[in-house]
Amino acid sequence: MPVLFCGECVSDAGPHLVRVIFTDKSHISLKNTQCIVCSIEVYEPATMVSPLKLASAGSVSLGSYPIEPMQVLRVFAGQVDKKDRSRFTLRYQLGTAEGEIVGRMNGRVVELFVKNGPLMDEPKE
Image (cartoon, rainbow, N blue to C red):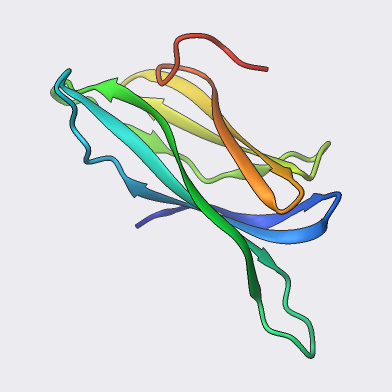
């Protein structure tokens, strides 16, 4: 399972290690589409006296796309937003179309959504 993002994000709950893992794209629906599912793990940082501790975990479906011959989904390594360390972005490419997935740390939970591109119908801010 490829790791799409692993880095430190900072929210009002303090700094946390965030890991986003591409877990499944194999679900094929009756409409001949594939779903994209990611798991998200948030860890409290380790200290000299305490180990790394899981703060929250979950999964999210980021959307689906039609199955077409030779259409490849590529997701590029995530980058922390330099202006807002509670956010990170993942660029992706489906065939020749590109888009962006945004992660946002809210307390000890990460919200993940498709901002634009072929995995969505309407752009989000």
